[in-house]
Length: 336
Image (cartoon, rainbow, N blue to C red; front, side):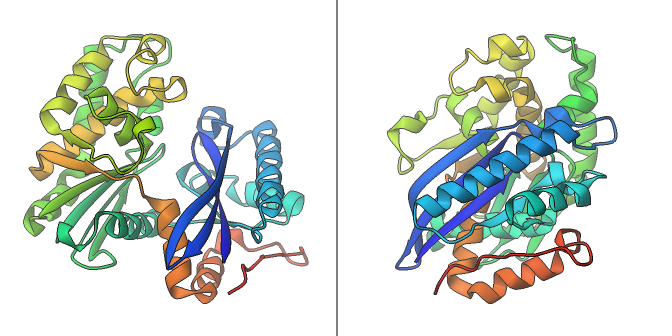
């Protein structure tokens, strides 16, 4: 069967069209629309009306593209930037009314669970009990498990974009040593209990997902993305510490010239590096394996393995995605 998925993140709306062959989501087509939602929120986290309109256009384009590629209506979800917005309900209803696509806002713990599943399928059972770290724009997801799904998950408000807004003042480029130290103290405090749990579990393997970790690994010397997903990539704590020193000395425009650091993520790359290094240091993990599969693959795998009933249950539990009374609701279910 052919499936499609839409992921509304802090920076982009991504469409993935896959063929579920032998239980594996094989990519057929991908597309993305750069909206940078996180840059268009006010001090309370509300998404602007103009940005909501552009989000509606992007989701409509994604649904149309999926249809052109022969896929059913997309499984659609949004991460922290929408989940935490005070006007979340208005945003979701605007998208549903304008496109017919219902977007679910997944709790951070569910994001961690699904990302763990994607990483487990990619890394395999030889990894043994492993810890997972995923740095998003709005949150950090941490998980640990011995099997298909994690035994422990946590979602912390330590996203790279969030911390950049909170601690690295606009116009202060490069950021002051004082600002970076304050951010690091905050990250340490937030991570204390979760890091203690991971140390107690003693994972055999540590896995890092997300574009943030991929770009930092490239900056530290890992193979570029053009060499494909099957090239092993690792990131050592000591190399990540050196990345922090490099990034902290440069304004965002100069960071974007470094290997692996893209212009849209340059401003938040320092915060991402601080979070990554701190979580590795506090958990006692020296090296992480950078995994190309994450939450999108986790959603697709869970759908393939557990069926449409699983996704329907996710939709029903997502109270904030339910329509207002009398509003039309269309959820396209891919054929079995």
